[in-house]
Amino acid sequence: MDILGWDDKLSTGFAEIDADHKSLFDYINVLEAAVSERRGREMSKGVLGALLDYAKYHFAREEAIFTKEPGYNGVAAHLEQHRKFVAEMEKYNESLSSEVDVSADMAAFLSEWLVRHIMTVDKAFFATVNK
Image 1 (spheres, rainbow, N blue to C red):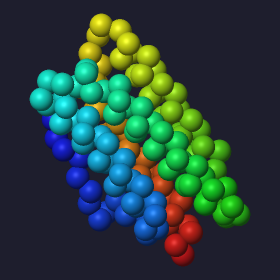
Image 2 (image 1 turned 30 degrees about the vertical axis):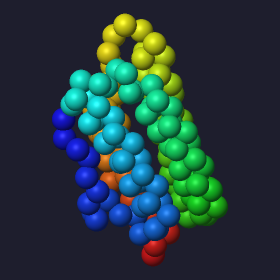
Image 3 (image 1 turned 90 degrees about the vertical axis):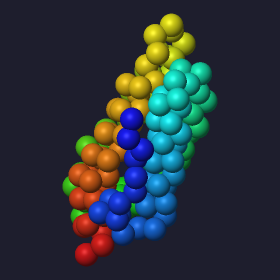
Image 4 (image 1 turned 180 degrees about the horizontal axis):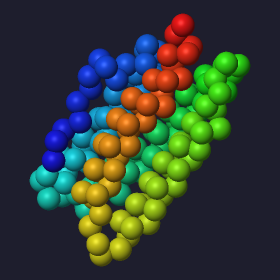
């Protein structure tokens, strides 16, 4: 499994938001390392709980910025993406209670979702604010 690395092309131009994104990368990398070491199932519950708490904190910070921006037309869609992410993580959390190891699938989803979300939705918003 690849370690998720920060690249400056992911930067939003807002230091606090970029720091949050880097922290989310760190959580995902802990999970990916555990999966690689075949400890994904045992570590996933704790990592997922911490990641979900941090994601909610980050989403609240981000939403406080973009809901105050009058020229941002993507508020509803952005909020919906955050809501769907939290719902998906809660499903993974429930799945971790079963006998099936979903940690590798969860790590892959997290990596793909976060990079895609930053590169499309977040960058589109912060580009309008940074003008």
